[in-house]
Image 1 (cartoon, rainbow, N blue to C red):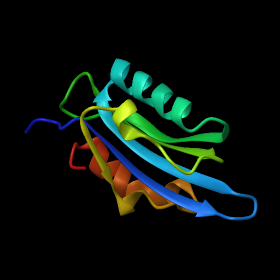
Image 2: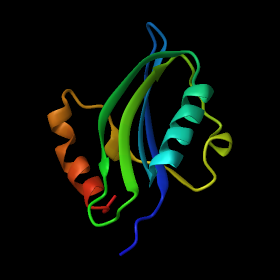
Image 3: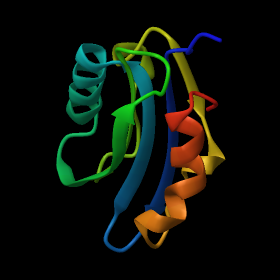
Image 4: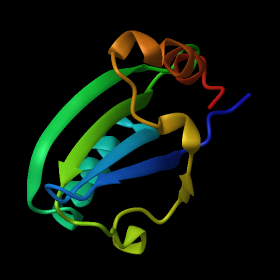
Length: 115
């Protein structure tokens, strides 16, 4: 089984103060993840907060990693065509959670390349 490179995302918002909480799951090579992550930050400027949830190499696929993280921004939109040319998909599994422990199922799926 091969690993599919992708960018999955989910956005939730609050009105007072106006904030947009973007959660992303990237699957790609390390160098690509760094570039895509920077492009996401550029699109969402100004970034209010950034939080890493988990990042590891995918088991059985040397050189491929997953990275789950959130960006809090005042920006409500991203032009994904300027961020990543591969598979980009909204994914409800990236809804915000109270603690990192609640991410364990998705982390396990990502770690094994089943996302």
